Length: 144
Image (cartoon, helix red, strand yellow):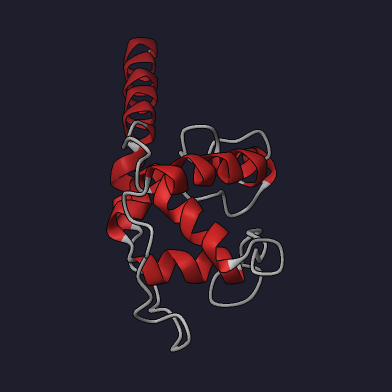
């Protein structure tokens, strides 16, 4: 009986470990069912795509403002992430499936209000439109 209990316990531990091993990428991609941006953001497209100055400027803005929650590599693992509920999104993975208009909307408006209810602050009073596009331009370069 003891041996059977030990085996059941071991199987339970292994199953728990396996279920926790689902990659962050798979989880992130699964969660891309997002609301469409409101009319004032819908259809916006990044005018700075591929601009090397925008990429480096966006990286500096990201490091100054976003790393605390989203982490150095954009995986939602910054030093403040552990205290947040919901956890910050893994931008390095998610941004691939999100349009420019959606990213601009989320950065500009943040997530304090519905439909998001997250700790993401609104940046539109801190960053101007070009700076938001620079951040998005940088995000598009983060390795997945």
